[in-house]
Amino acid sequence: MKLQWIGIVGLLFAQEGLAAEPSTLEKAYFKELSFLKAQKAEMETRAQVGEREGERQLLQAKAEVDAKSTRLLELRRRSEALEEQLREASPAGRDKAEFVWDTVTRANELFAEETPRITAPAKDPAPSPAVLAELLTTTFAEVEKEVRLGHQIRTAPGTFFDGEGGKHEGQLVHVGRVAAFGVAGPVAGALAPAGEGQLKLVPIAADETARALAGGQTPQLFAVFLADAFDTLVLDGKDTELSKEIQAAQAGANMKNNGIVETLMGLPIFHAEWVLYLLIIMSFVSVGVMIERALFFRRHRVDIDTVRSQLKTHLVRGDFQGAADLLSGYDSLETNVVLCGLREHETGPDSVEDLIRGAEAKEKLRYNKWLSFLATVGSNSPFIGLFGTVLGIIRAFADLGADMGGAGGSVMAGISEALIATAVGLLVAIPAVIAYNAFSGRVKTVIANSELLSRTLLSALKAHETAAPRLGVN
Image (cartoon, rainbow, N blue to C red):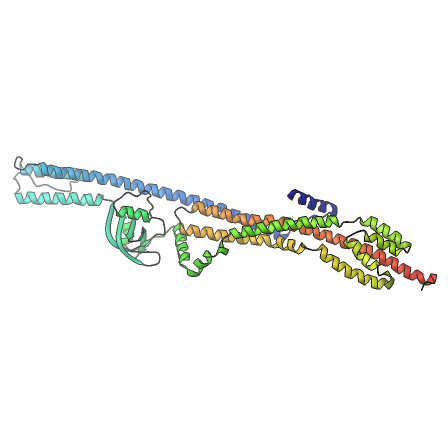
């Protein structure tokens, strides 16, 4: 069916010699589509760069945590070995001084520093038991300090703030000097320096990571906000500049907290799907109108030259009844208009001309039927499609603000779906505009043919009126 009406429209163009060049409005539509495609390509590039940078930071954090965990396990193993040796040692069977010096030596080896951290007293003269006891106390204190420093995941009570400014008291989990997490009841996530020594939640999906670390477990997914010298920033009371992605996420969270925006986003009209359904319905209706109009014009066509020649022959002979019978065999605007005047030829040329003008206006309504609908579809479909594209982009960026961690792909998919609305709008508009121009041109041609036949009748009536007095006709 689609091939039939395309062929019909092409035939109309071939016969009438119409050639519709792209209008200024259509050029603007294609320019807007190119601009949106360029925006899509730029957003895809930025999303890919952001994803690669996030993966690099995550791998770096995991490598650092693994290295520190290995170091911690080694320190713990050595500490436990020393404690086991102390428990198994028998001071009664060994010289206490030698035991102490051996312990100090092992501790300095553990620290692996160029200058020994613990200095043992000289063996001669032998130190007193009090000095040996103090030396052992110092040695174990340094070992414990080293173990604590090597423990890169530290948990302690503390406070932090959420995105709305609410204060929460719970557990703070520090991962080395690069990141921190907060857990307080139902609120949990990654933290960032907020200035004045405070911490605030970062809008990334890190609640599972925070709860796992606070419980002493290894998280399956390590979602983290990294900052150089994290602890130093907090102690100095400085803030950190969040990346553009996290700023966008905060803006999305703020938008969700805005009552009127959240209400509007929840309305069905702010979803792009209904725009596509509307355009599809308009497309089916416009195709139906095109087929109906094409069949109408084909059914009411006449060979104007043949009709005019036959009409002129009857009029020259003064056979007005024969001319009326001739035109009655056709059903077209040209013949119906002239037939209306021909039936009242006795009233004179002026009266017949008025009757022809009235009949022509009535017939034009029949020929222009549904053309205004095609004009409306052709002029407004691109704007409807553009409206759907805007709604789709709004929805895509809302999804991006809701989930910064994994929304890059979904945002690109959302923008692609949004651009479909513009493409569908143009797809609906272009055939409607072509059909409207073709049918409008056909109507103009029919009216011109009607004018030709009308002038032929009026000319014959005026000639008959002039010749009547000379022939003695009253």
